[in-house]
Length: 335
Image (cartoon, rainbow, N blue to C red; front, side, top):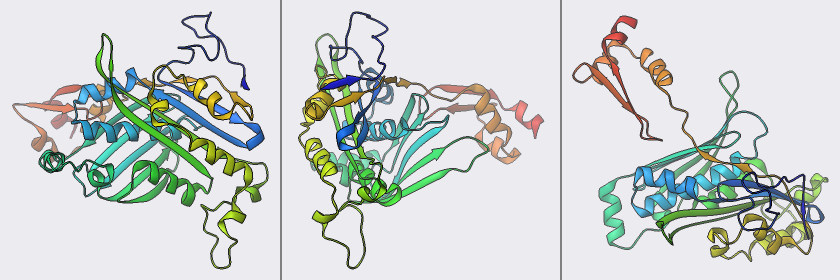
């Protein structure tokens, strides 16, 4: 059974009903709840938004795939925020792709970029070693929640030592949040008629949130010496959620003919799944001429000189690639 929770018809076509092709559409986060299993979560399919971000940067395919995974994690986790703020995913590693940044601003703005060593990457591609563990190497994954200028940031740090982003996200919830969590990610470059090759990604997060805190103890949480066996710790309801999530085929997450709500129905119809209104996610950058001017006004005279070429200061946003140019003289006056 699939139940809607005050779900309006699609704004673009009021004849569409839940489950119809194109109801929620791409680039929407769909929250859901499976009451009998005490599970809640979100599912998302990124299409044009992701293709726009990756196409703008024109990264090599292995880098683009990693950044797409980072974007998925940022959207799945950031869309849970109930306040105005940001969720920032950032990696810092010693691999050829030494930095990934995905920045999600509520209610639904995403921007992302990657930094990589072209020579090291080329060598690994030639050797056929393009697994995410190799490309990332060793380092850390930082997950930051920023509620604004006058609040303290919350940050969780997870080691990246030969692990994937999906595995690192599981570790984050196991260690920092202590919420039993399942995450599934998939990225692909598809050939669409009339569009050529396009990027697409899909992801699902499911969490065990029973009313009784004692039921949240699972085998994922280390109980120390004398802890019960793993089988004794895992709640039957959560075991069922894990089993159902494991049946997701990678193709189901990125197939444009499988709507998110259809996927949820396939997984949980026997228990009954409640689907909530989706939130659109847009390719939007928060950079502006005024923001960059404010940063430059904080530069010392020496830093202004170092940044000046032919009397001009040129700044390019790493996220959206937009360029800004300023007359250096106005900043000398300010300093």
